[in-house]
Length: 256
Image (cartoon, rainbow, N blue to C red):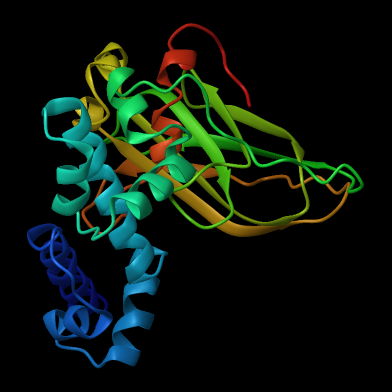
C-alpha cells in the first residue's frame, strides 16, 4: 500500500509541475491521484510532510526564482507563468518567503544578503536545539544548511546554522513553539556553483527532516538528529530561504 500511495502522490507532483501556470483545485489534484479529496490530502501530507497547497506554493516559488535569474521575463509575466493571477499577491508572497522583492532578487543574481528572521518574544525564555547531522553512503555532502521552520519547507526559518560538513550542530536562542527541523546539502566540490543561480547546485542535493518538535521555554532539545539522503521527487522544494544563505556560508561559519 505504501508504494501505491507514493506513486499516486508522484502523479500529483508531476501534475503540479506540468500545470504550474494554471488554476486548479484540491479536487483536480485528487482526481490526478485517483483518490477522494479527503483521502488524498491525508495521503499527500503523510508522504511529503506538508499539505498539497504548501507543496504547490513551494514549487511555484522555486520556478519563479529560476525564471528571475535565468530569463528576461517581466515580474508580471513570471507571476502569471507560475500560477498567480495578481502580481501584487505574487510579489508579497515572494518577499515574505525570500526576504526581498522579485526585482531585487533578480538584481542580486539570486543571492540575497540575509534571511528575514521573525522577532523573538522578549518575555519568553529561549531554549536551544542540539543534534547530529550524518549522511547516507549515497550522499557526498559539502556545506550543510540546518534550519527551524514554523510551517514546513518554505518561508523564513526562525533559527538556522551552516556546517562545512556533517557533524554536530546547535541552534541557540530558539523561541518556544512547534518547529520543523530541516536540512539540505549540495555535493562536495559543488559549493561554489551555488552562486550561479538558485538551482545550479541541485545535482547532488541531499535533504533531511526531523519533527515537528516542541520547544518549551528554557528547556533544551537534545538528540534532534538528521540523516541526509538523496533528494527524492516526493520531497517538497525545500529550504528556499536557506539556499539564500550561500553568500554568507561560502565566506564564514555562519549561524543565525
